Every structure is written in C-alpha cells, then in structure tokens.
Length: 343
Ligand SMILES: Nc1ncnc2c1ncn2[C@@H]1O[C@H](COP(=O)(O)OP(=O)(O)OP(=O)(O)O)[C@@H](O)[C@H]1O
Image 1 (cartoon, rainbow, N blue to C red):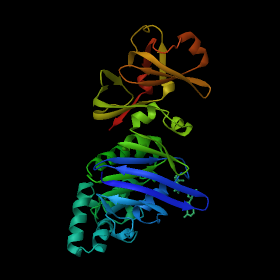
Image 2 (cartoon, rainbow, N blue to C red):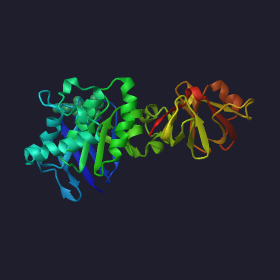
Image 3 (cartoon, helix red, strand yellow):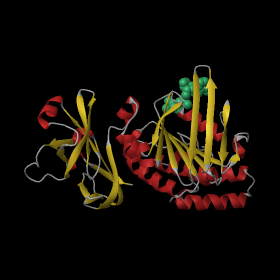
Image 4 (cartoon, helix red, strand yellow):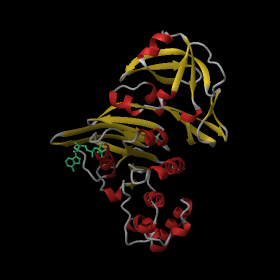
C-alpha cells in the first residue's frame, strides 16, 4: 500500500475518524453528503489541517509531522487556485521552484507537463484566459509538478458547466490512470465518483459507512444516502461505435462510443416482462429475480443474469409480474434511455 492513514480530526461539534488505505496507481474517491468531512480529510492528508489523533504513512514513512510544503503530495483544489498573475507555465513551475529546483529545471519540467496535458500552446497564457477544462489541466499539471506520491483532488469537476463536465470527466480519468502514486479524490457527485474511482469510500457524519468498487456499492447500498446516490445501473464495457459490449450483452445507446466505455441507465428505464416481449426491442435479455425492495413509491427489483440490474416498477406491476426470487424474467432497456460514454 502506498497510503495508509488513520485520520482523526475533532472540532467542537464534529469528529472525523477515518481509516484509509490506497494502493499504488489506485484512485479512491471519498464520497459523502455536505458536511460529512471529505474536505477535512483531504486537508488533513495535505497537512493543511492538523490531526487530533492518528497517523499518515506514505510508502511506510510517516508524513503527518511534516509541514504541508515538505510532503510529497500534490493538490488540485476545487476552484484550482491558480495564481492569476502568473502564466500557465509559471503556475506549474512554482512548486518545483519552491522545492529547490533551479528556474531552468522547473520550467523544463513544467513545459513537459503542459505538453502531456495537451496545453503546449497555452504555456504563456494567464489563467483568466483559459477555459474551465484548460484551467483544470493546468491545476493537475501543477499538482504533478512536485512529483507527488499522493495526489489529492477536491471536487475537481465542480467548477465546470454541465456540458464540459462530461467530456472532462472521461479525460480526467485517463490522466489519472497515467499516475502511478496514490490518488484520493473528494466529490459529492455520484456520477463523478462512479466514473473516476477504482474504489469508493462513502463517509457520513465523519465516519465510513460503506466501501467498495462502484459496482459493489451500486449493487448493495447500505444506507439511504448511498441508495439514493447510486440511482443508476452502470457497467464498463467496450464500444464498437454502434454498440457497447458488456460481457455477453451488446448495448445500443443514445451515444456512439468506440473503445473502453461506460453504459449507464436509471432503474426506471428498465422494463420487465414475464414472457419474451413481441417484436425485438434492443437491449433485451433474460435474467432471474434476485430480490425485491421498496423504493420510494415504487418497488426496486434486482435481477441477476448476464449483468446485475436494478429495475423500478410500480406496485401495480409487481402483482402482474409475480416477482418471486429465482423466477425467470425478461429485461429490456430502451436505447434512448441508455447512455454510453468513454471510460
Ligand atoms: N475551519 C472549520 N472550523 C470549524 N468547523 C469546520 C471547519 N471546516 C469545516 N468545519 C465543519 O466540519 C464538518 C465537516 O466539514 P467538511 O468541509 O470536511 O465536509 P465536506 O464533506 O467536505 O462537505 P462539503 O461537501 O459541503 O464540502 C462540518 O460540520 C463543517 O461545518
């Protein structure tokens, strides 16, 4: 493990108590409602908030007694906090300079990083002339410039508009997968969490309530918050432009994707049938009822099969469908309600 931490921060009306381990190259997302303690945890890892108790080890070495600027940690803040009066290049070169690199070395390193982020031609541009996505890449380059072994990102997509967000989300995932240290990311957006994380750690009121891969968490929520949060079926597969293959299934979706792809749809987009439906709707397969539970005014049906799926049906439909666990059932999802995007 690269990062091994026990983070305890006490405040008059709040206590954060968190065990966190993150492996090499792993992206762990801290997910939780407002006030859960996510930012506090991140700030404690960065050395910006003191620990009340606990310790933080990176590659077996304790870093929690080191001041922030001595820790091998890179941080991307929510609004990036780029220095407005410095060019993109100097923003990125700032960290290495502070850590004792010569001006020429720091600028060389910064230039390489900006190149890697596809920002070579923006090196001399000041932050206010960058788009949200570009500013985020500069902030990521700046965090990586100190050659961190731990990368921390606080709501890295929050400053972007909804349209840019989709694209930047996939791009950020690719960039994070190229980093071989440990990454801890904080968000309260479930889709960001699902897409960006190898593993989710859900925190509520300063404590971990659930931990696992996005699929595990989505399949078996343990708290109302998590259940509401993951109101999505989500799979990872391979797109051929027309369909996205997930195991034995090939999903037709609204969007066309080639290469590694996610497929997502809401449980309310899923229709269930006792017998194979007439015609040949796309995205159709046979499964077996795994479980049934109340979900707001509806009933959530879990179906096992080639992929596990959650379907929301009305109480009236429940009677018609005979939802006994183990019973075979046909599942279909409209392509128009199925979303695909690059993984
Ligand atoms: N500087 C501070 N002094 C005192 N209390 C604070 C301070 N910062 C945060 N808190 C409190 O600590 C708790 C955890 O806050 P924190 O910002 O870590 O939550 P969060 O999960 O990041 O929430 P959000 O998603 O709203 O950013 C909250 O009750 C908050 O009011």
